[in-house]
Every structure is written in structure tokens, then in C-alpha cells.
Image 1 (cartoon, one colour):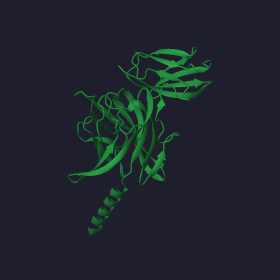
Image 2: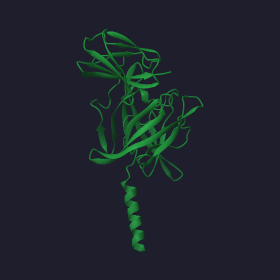
Image 3: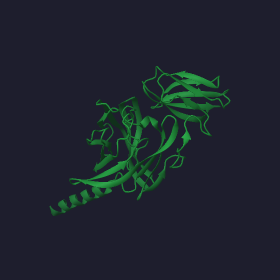
Image 4: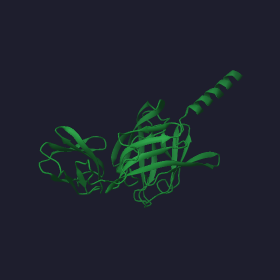
Length: 299
């Protein structure tokens, strides 16, 4: 009997200590952010631990990243129970604890969030459904990785969440521009902490984006404006030869919405029939991808 008890204690010890701690000391996430007129580098960063009752709570500073329609909401608070990560902030979740990531979930399982809409009293329910479970190895460390569908946002998005790193696209994977800022995230650039070290997730540097104009950069082939848009968007290739240029419009799931052959250097696209949400505008020349930009359609 004592042997069994000791074995159970040992197995519990192993399970507890094999969990990956989310938001350890030095944790920092960098994103490339499109605010409509310029790119900027946005950072979410571990600040410190605090104690509430018997629980250790982690504080993340992440302005904006959860501010659409709110203005800055201040920090978010993170706690972990087993492989489930919970969060709260003062406006988006009205200081209630909600699931951010559940790495214990199996394919077919779901969890829901009630997220405040803008500065109003309205809320939306967003459901996360796990469609696949696997692992990935980064910096020599094996991490759980879930494929998820995020529902009840503009359409839905299929993406992944990874232990330690969080959302592979966005720290708060709710994908609803009424609730937070994901439509404006262009790329997840880097993650680092004091133990794991740093992982660079794109060919861009971790500080990429500061001071770069959205409308035209030195290496930009395409100008897309206004962005966000609710009726007509202009695609400007005024500095390019458009003889073999094509534009493909895709939604966030990768579904092709339109494919256009450009016969003029400036083209006006009607998007009033599009559903509100995030789209990707891809420029091809001689059947090669030259540039891809994010387009946000608002209603």
C-alpha cells in the first residue's frame, strides 16, 4: 500500500514538474502591427509576479494588443493551473478569469470566452474548438501544439497555439476586431525568455516595423488604401509594370474570394459585399508572389 502511495506521489511530482510554465521571467513577445498609416513594433512583456490568496499571478504589459475601441486597457493578469492558462483584464474580460489556452484539451474539445465589445456594455461569445493535437520542437525543447478553430469572430480562423509561445499569430487569439486588435497584427516576430532563450519566427528582426509607412516603403510594390475600409479600396501599383500583374484576395481561412488581372496601374476594388473581417491581398507578377498585405473590412 505504501509503495502504491509513494508511486502516486512520484507520478504527481513528475507531472507537475513536466508542465511548461507560461510567461516565465523575461518573457517577451514582439509583433509587427499595422495601425492604418504606419507599421510599428508592438511588445507584450512579463512585468512581475504577484500573490492573490494562494495563487501566483503573472502580470503582462501589452498595450495595445487588447485595446480596439477601448484605448489602453492596462496590463493583463495570467495564472496557470496544470496545462490550462487563464487571463483577465479590466475591460476585455471585466476582471473575470477566462481560459486563454487549454493545452490539456484533446481534439473535439472546446472552450468559450465572453469578451466585451469596444467600450460598450455588449459582449460576444467566442468559441475555440481544438481540431488537432501534436508537438513541435523549438530551441531543443518539445512543446505541445494545438490546431484550433476560433469561431463567432468575422467568419472563423484556423490557427495554432503553442506552449510557451502562445498563439502562433497573436497572443490573444480571439480574431474579432470589435473585441481586440488582431486584424492589425501583421506578423508574430519573436519570443524570448530568460530560460528558453530567443526564437525568431520570421525573416524580419525582432524590432522590425518602427517608423515604416504602410502606404509606401522603400521595398513596397503595392499601396492599399484606405485600410481599414468599408466600401472601396484602391490598389496602387503606380511604380510598377502591371503587364503580368495579378491580385488575389483571400479570407483568413485561405479561401480565394477574387482573382483579378491588373490592366491599369491604379485599380479600385469594391468590397462592400465582403463580410466584415480580415483579408489578404496578394500581388503576383509572372506567377510569383511579390507582396502580400492585410486588408481589414469594417461594417
